[in-house]
Amino acid sequence: MLKNSAAILAVVSLVLSILIGVALSRRGAAPAARSGPGVREPVIGLSMDTLKEARWQRDRDYFLERAQELGARVRVQSANSDDTRQIQDVKALLASKVDALVIVPHNGAAMAAGVREAKLAGVPVIAYDRLITDCDLDLYLSFDNVRVGELQARYLVEHLPGGRGRIVRIYGAPTDHNAVLFKQGQDIVLEPLISRGDITVVHEDWAVDWDSSNAKKIMNAALTKGAAFDAVLASNDGTAGGAIQALKEANLAGKVAVTGQDAEAVACQRIVNGTQAMTIYKPIRRLATRAAELAFDMALGRPVVANGVVSNGMEAVPAVLLDVVVVDKDNMRETVIADGYYTRDDIYGAAGKE
Ligand code: BGC
Image (tube, rainbow, N blue to C red):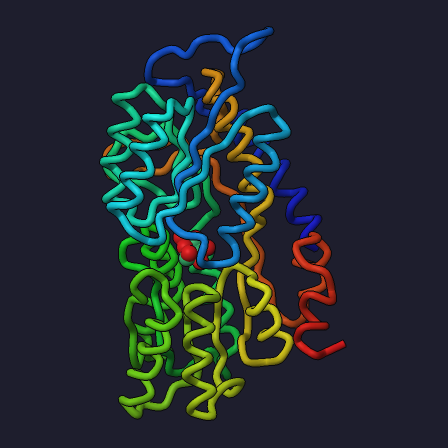
């Protein structure tokens, strides 16, 4: 199923690229041609917010693999969820004369300052997975994040008896533009149901820095209120993990459906064990590989082609958005396992199921 949807997506992306392709050329200083003997290989700077969630380690590794295959050198920095440190990382990468910059911002608004520095240095910037707002950005590469939120909420509603019930909502980091997009997607599904009285939100809050311990606190606050609930709309697997820990301590794990996102191994294990209902698989290898290819081309001053545009508050940023897949206990094998993201043993072995 995943292979089919991936194939359809690839065809759709190609057609879209041709139809509404946006030819990008480096907007800064024209780079020198870099081919032939004695000419140095392009250097790409990769500035990451964090490597805390397992997915970011995969993003980095796949990115490095593809960039190196193409003949680029990559300098990686990770800021440990600290805005000041991430701006310093960007400045250091620019000072080391990178030819292109790929940034996963901790704070999409604060990082506009980093993009301005890059512009002054004539270095093109790709916002990777998370948008950087209010700045002159060359390219945004991500998944369809509004759709992620819609899929999470739709799954939850479809698994509530009669599509009705009381829920707790745990949003992501308020500093991450993606968290806003996930909520936006969830709202598209939930708002009409909330107005109709089919869904009641008994508690909601934002988990600072996407931290699972903050999500656990939010869950505990919901439990302390004493209002009964049927499901937890957690925005990613990390926050789902924190919520499930709190539910376990209250003897409720497995009794209320919990959503997630990222298809982390631990989350997939929780799904087969019944304490988490679903996750969203975002094919990280495709994203990171594409980003490495686009960054490589931009580093060489070659035009690249986007398949859409996204407003970042200041301008319409050329964007490449990939699709995502819902994963639950019924399609684990056909999705993350069939795609080679995990082996059967990674999930069922570690979950004690096989
Ligand atoms: C990403 C999610 C991730 C979260 C926390 C978001 O921007 O889209 O995949 O779980 O950050 O790192």
